[in-house]
Structure formats: structure tokens, C-alpha cells
Length: 150
Image (tube, rainbow, N blue to C red; front, side, top):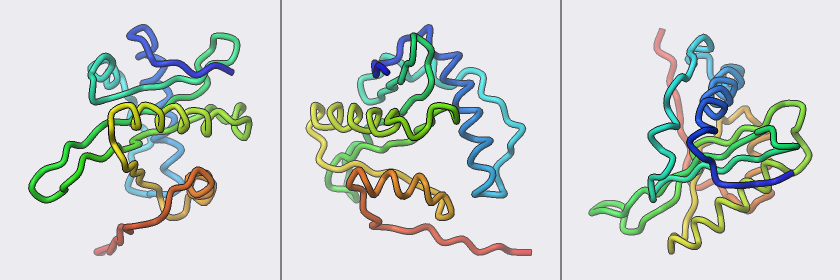
């Protein structure tokens, strides 16, 4: 398996994988539209110095990816942080270290940008993802609470 920075020609595959990620998240969040298809999101992010897309390849096939970006500090948030926004590995390639390797590459990118904090949002019921992030050193610092109004 190889991890590398995404190139423009990877964007259609990454958009497809984001569509799969959205569909996968439906099991944890009933408000997600599982019929939504991403067609042109990542094209505008590739090459942006405050955003990064890494891909995991197996025999030159993209089998997973990570998308993250920098949120600059401001009057409220005193320091810049890096947000791990999307992480997905094709089901047939899970539990082989791709997700961990993608997170490790993102961490190096974050360090190289002099950022000292990474954040990620995870659905509460997604125990596998939570376990992965905890294994990589993430700690719960905030929780989102939802009230269903019927």
C-alpha cells in the first residue's frame, strides 16, 4: 500500500469515495440523504495550501482517502487547528492499516504547517471509527447533542 498526495486526476475517484462515505454514514445519522451523489467537490480543494487530500493506493488503485484542512485562529479560537474532515477506506481493504497510515500522513502535514491540534467529528454510534481515532491518540473534548423535534 502507498500513501500519496492527491492529484487533479484523482478527483473523480475521491468524489465517488465521498459518496460512499456519505452512504455509509447514513447508518449512524438518519438525516443523511443516502441518494446524494458527489460530482465535483474535491477538484477545487486540490492545490489549496490550507487543504490536503491524501490517497491510499493498492496496485495503483485508490482504495481510500483522507481530506483535512486548516482553520485559522481568530478572536474566539486563539490558535489555528487542523480538521480531519473525511476519512474513508473501501470496505474490502479495511483493517489493513490504510486508515492509520492516512492519519499518520495527515499528522505530519499538520506538524509541517506548525499546527498543534487536530480535530475530527465522529458519529456517536460509529464505534469502529471512534476506536480508530482513540487508538491514534484522539480524545473526546466536545460532544454534539441532538434533540429530535416531532
